[in-house]
Image (cartoon, rainbow, N blue to C red; front, side, top):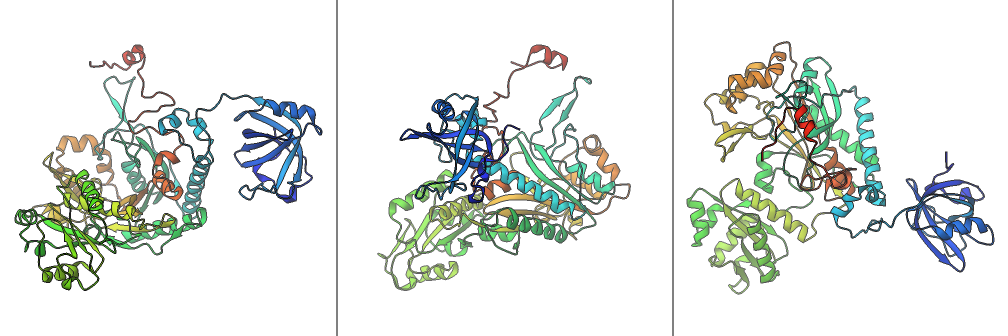
Length: 596
């Protein structure tokens, strides 16, 4: 070994030791003829002192050193002189007095400072990702990711789960997003597909009798990217036989609670995790992944709004739409310009506008004057109406009411954007608090207006709720509930799962409703349908996203900060310049011709 100790390990009890260290020069400075360097490795950082009177040869080496040079140092541990201790550094009470130094490698000047407060554009950081990963925050992020994954493996192993790998090269099946296709050289004109998830594989493992399976699975989806999406991502894939929904939710809550208390004990965690239905989440928070760190709950006031002469409200109600909104406590004093900014956010979300009422008086709402009640044009209603509205919505003096009009589901999507924006604007969410919840009883199907067809809300292997199978033949498909559930936290979806279908005829009926022909059903799903005829047990599972979980635990707004080598939002790898063209001979081998 080129070293016998870690830079971040030294404390007062090590004084007098003579370690050999190796690492990167984090910073170099010269004071009064003595050179100081902060030597950094993966464990941390320690100050090294080069004194020309004590070791002139080591001093000559130090005189050449620059940031990010790689150096080996031999020296003696001593206490820092009184008054020079660094409480911000774990090793801040001691320093290493160098007796020998060897340059192991030099470095060009990095294109940006390798510090947590880096101001470099993300594209530059991704272009030099190997340098970006040296920053302390990135080191902490990936170390935390390691601890999370290790905890998951140990937790599930202790509960009888087997980690089983499933294939990466599979067959293209419709599961909600575009597949990545891989051409076969040995069978020209045929393609593998990279798995969007190991969905059919884990169900087949249940049929195979393994009963408790998990995998830290790599998944691939060719979809538009954003801060919480990547073309390739990692999820915990988990499946169990002979279980009901509560069994899976209880296990998931136990896993997350124990993990967070172990790897991030500084986080505030609300327990137990509440369980709310999809309908309740949409009614109260206008979102199926609500941030429960604050209130701002929705109220439907369509009947009261219909009493006004406000044309937007009247036409919306007459057209089958709804009027919903929420109270922002204590914000009646917002200025007109601030309210206009909120209206701009609503329009950016796709809404036609945003109505507001500000109860700026100190007395009861029903006794406030027209001058004290500031409201959108067209809402000139008497005090008695405002009292009924305030009673319905739970508003009082000093409060602001925001209302939006539209048809569902767009209305809820607009309100969800406004609720999140207002929550962030007012700082209502505690960044160190984690509020998890299970959202259950999702609809089994949702209507695709553009394609004019039914689609699975989760995926086609999801079981309908008990007692609702008969509605598949002639009932209201949009009203059928499923045994699907999500785990959400602080406004993000972290996991999705369901009790699966395990009987062939029911699975075939779902495929038929989704518009698949008999030939497609046989071609794409023949293996799993046949397996269901060989004693398939009842089973279900859940698939938590590792990237999103670690991002939340790190307090990062983007999962790119917790992935070693991510893609940009356009799907480009700036470090390796991928995707890239390939040699024409490779295309010829694969029997592929490119279209202009």
